[in-house]
Image (spheres, rainbow, N blue to C red):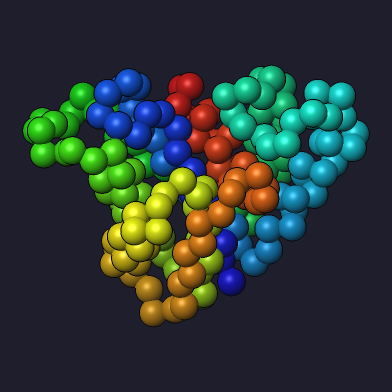
Length: 178
């Protein structure tokens, strides 16, 4: 089983930030290590800083915690791959055709789907922010762009419940800062 955690950084609409970044954290076999990294940070090294924080988010975490989190992932890099899609919104020539913020997100996420080389079942987790109708459209478009003969599940979940989504957020935010 392969797990994929997807999150974004930047404004989803045409205006606001110049870039929209979508990150997919691909996890081979099991994502319990991600849970353990966060548990250990909460119990030991960053106990005081993380005491009142429910969810790790890149934009409001101290830099040393972000660096520590990414270093912990790097220590187990054979288990993880990171896929990144970056959209420079200034390069969109015909802005009048995009009347829907979800279209930007869905299009960029579909580019991530094209990068996935799958050799087993895939479970995809996305931060829940869409309506039921939007979820259906997203799932259909994403699956259409996957090159897969294996079972694919797409789950839209609250990021407070999944450490993988929190790591995807930290990575996306880090790319956005760069």
